[in-house]
Length: 413
Ligand code: HEM
Image 1 (cartoon, rainbow, N blue to C red):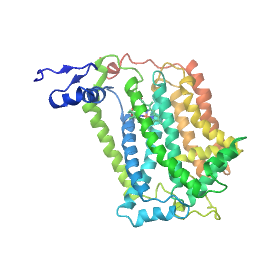
Image 2: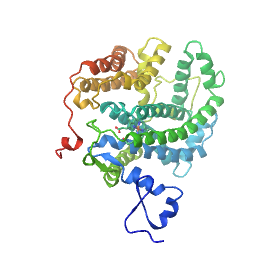
Image 3: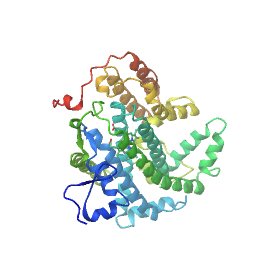
Image 4: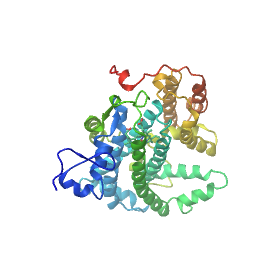
């Protein structure tokens, strides 16, 4: 029977398409759900460029999976062959250098985008009710991505892969009581060799797909709570929102083009910027490199690890710096989300960013001389921000008045 001219309304409340797609729509409302959750999805009208990073992360994640599968097809996870199989991908396989370069550049930019995405959440208070579970799912992703990146860096079995793994497994071994067992679970034997490499290859591969599953949950959470926005004031009327398509489809596309340009500049013109030359020498357990340092994105945690004068204490500080983020919804009880309206928290958050960057520099300089002092002061500030400044500011800060609505703040009351 011919469909009526006007659009039909389904049980989900969204308008259903007519004609051929009805065949799919009846057993599985794919089209109407797509319309409701993507095309017509109401987004706050005032989102800035910081809201581009979620979509960028999804795209880079897909790129990492695609290039990673190709690399896995040509990689040999044994301590004798791993380095040379990666060299063969670079030098002998057609286009292999580019796919490996994309995977390496992608890893760095993924972490960079992740830190910006997290900072956006801190700045606009996106961890506050009703988005706590969304925030937790993001933090779980952060930890999973870090583990994946660490496991991936070990696979080429270069000098930095080996000695980086040595530092981390020994740090794990310093955990009281269970440290020895944990270290053995990681290494699989009394030295870093084939068993260890095999385990980390499987871990790297497996985690990548688990990350995809958790991203699905994370994005589902965004659809339930809807997006926060730079004012931190929930949309109240349709005037405060815009449909996702075409407004945010086009905005995300522009963000993606700019990101792709940065990606290409790094990949084709500046490949040495984000990689460590020491890792282009095969792993040698008998020769410790002069400077053992992780990739740039782990430097702040490496700085924390070194600023504390005990191995286990350093490990606690590095792990605690992530764990404290899980407690944020309880530490910050202010009803105002965005730090734009919080005269104490705004400069204090800038201080947190400075402390984080300083800790990275401390990691780079191996916490020697004056860097040790800087590392300790930055570590105290980092934890002080979350455990002292935020709880006190929640009680005593005099916040600036919030606008009545998003539309009124844009002069469209
Ligand atoms: C694999 C990593 C991740 C992916 C692919 C991802 C993806 C996304 C996407 C697509 C959105 C919706 C678009 C947007 O608001 O930008 C989003 C929102 C969000 N993400 Fe993530 N995310 C990741 C990691 C994280 C992390 C580490 C956190 C922080 C702990 C986080 C916290 C949030 C929050 C709070 C929102 C809602 C923000 C708002 O509406 O203000 N995400 N994420």
